Image: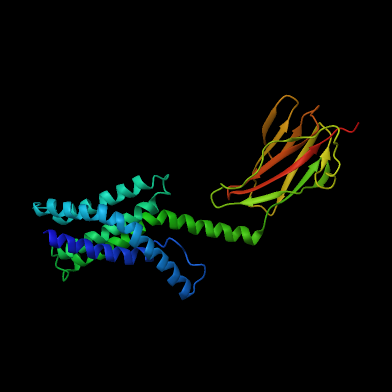
Length: 298
């Protein structure tokens, strides 16, 4: 039995090392050229042969041996028991060593599960001597791609949706902001950001208090200014629906965050001179931020 299990483990490790780079490349090629694919495969192969090989020896080999001991004395459901013994520890291992939030952890659970499925197939053929002439027995070869599809589908679907949204955003361009301040149209210079998950855009939500001695020198033409109180209405052209919009301003005692309803905001009276910060965000994870100045002429 020991020699058989060592043979099973050796073939399984070699097969996993060859197949894992095809299904789970650690470095995607920059182009669709054969040279880039070969370079990507080679890099992934070395990773799985080294780092992955250590875990396949430390975990895959003992699990395979334990599966042999248990199934050797299992009269019924031998193949099902063998399947569960191989796959369950691999899935638990992937979830423990890569404790990411759901569903981000699924691809990392898929790699050991895929390798465990290969161990299971080789074990069924060499140790349990399944009859591959049977059409049902041949179905075991579908287990590795089934594991791939099961664990990778959420990630692949999310990636596809992201690529579709990215293509739509690239085609339409960034939203264009215009403001109407006390009935007068005012152009807005805004900063735009989009990421696939809504994270990673760096922006400030603090208003900027203008020292009286400084005034607004250098800001004319860059930021529209008004006196308080003021009625503001915003319009976002070239946008995918109406955004959620927020204003951040200092009311004289503290900084306030105000949700702008119907893209209309009334700034209160007696506000200190400042640059009021505005943030607009869409369900597509697009973000736009900009300033409107409040300044009282002496």
